[in-house]
Image (cartoon, rainbow, N blue to C red):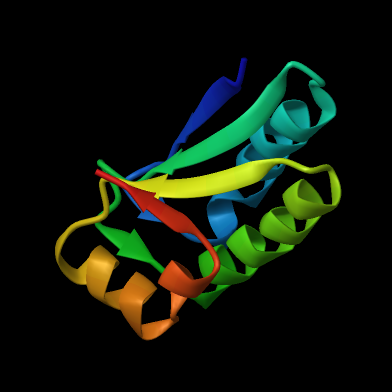
Length: 95
């Protein structure tokens, strides 16, 4: 049975959110009961390259821990930025 954790991202997803993002991701990856992690972009209006880099770093760590990461709820400019960064090649998208 798969346990899914959801990381709800802030309106402004940038380096200023680094510590909280790191705390949440580490908690999910360190928890042996969790094997799926969802990045919920439902509230995100802004993200920058630092956010994309943080996502990539944690995706590599999750993969090494045999955990799967997903993106859900991205819309508007946020969805366009994720598409331009080819995140659909790395993360599965949930509807």
